[in-house]
Image 1 (cartoon, helix red, strand yellow):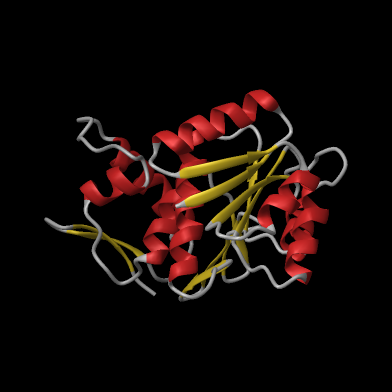
Image 2 (image 1 turned 120 degrees about the horizontal axis):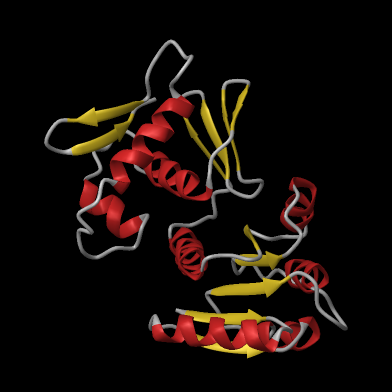
Length: 223
């Protein structure tokens, strides 16, 4: 995957470029929005990772210009501005996802790779729906019916994975690899603890339980 990182913080940019490169990706760094715009206009990128606040031309202005020019390359905004209103501004400017600083690098990589996969399948989803459960990937909100559900970051990732595989049984190994990015069994009850917490939040108080335990197979989210 070819990734353009547009970040004016030299230390943060170096860490991103190193980490993404070690993950097997071809990464180019632009020091601000103006240089980022020029580089993006050359074409050939799979994902843009764009800091929102930069000198000369900020991330919002850069992405708005690209969208007006017809560039539909997926954009992941990075920003210390984390309120819902800030994320909405990023979405309206043409962003596809929004990650608030400080962030876990594993989450950055997971989101970049998710954007690339969504592009390959013909579109970028910003809202997931399973029955009366709805997840907004930009605002990072979850509702079941009219009830807002407050989730911790890892719970959000876990539910996102389950919603993307709704109706399918997902194994513990799948969850360890895709949600926790473990390629070994840590021999802990981390999955059980998070499943229990998630179940209490999305099912407790509702007439029908959505998160099912499949004996001998794992877990399944049902509409």
